[in-house]
Image (cartoon, rainbow over all chains, first blue to last red; front, side, top):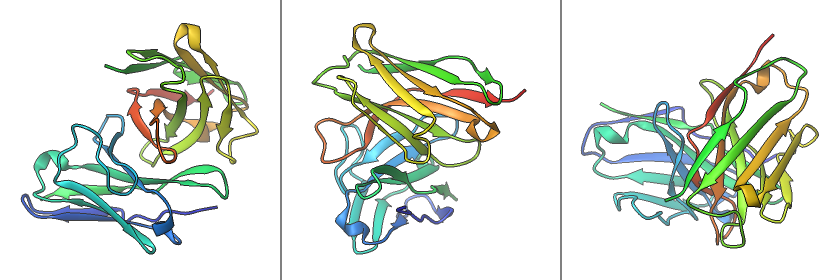
Length: 108
Length: 122
């Protein structure tokens, strides 16, 4: 089955740029989606199809995808960005929705 | 504005069946919003897709859960439901219902219910 790998944690200072990676075999050929989940809340879709943002998501949140790594980038990080972030793909071979293990973003 | 709400027992005994319902408000389960799903999250862990149902009853399931899962839809009641049989403690977690984005290139979920905690314990 297809596996998505994320680092457990990322820490950045306010105002800096956070990059959250999602690794997978040839992930650049898939559409990657990203969710933000704050404690006690449901996930929120923040990026879909590698780089598109749903309405209401600020432009400082962006996504990219190439080769074996997809990346969620948050510019000008704010305290309110502290959350767990999950990547997700559809694996057509196994006909399964696959989530990464999640990355906890801490704002120092 | 779309709102979804999960409902069902918060406690289920091992070997029994977990049953949850998601009620949709502010949208209809129809051709315009055709796909709806269930995702779960064990305590302190990541997300796991359970399955998806279409407005006309077509289903797709996580291969690892397929033998125990049934998802059904009742468009007239604006509801869709989850049944998971033969539960164990490993099925404990928060269960979310969600709307699959449509139209979309492939599967992602653009709106989620608040989630409901289901504990499997005797």
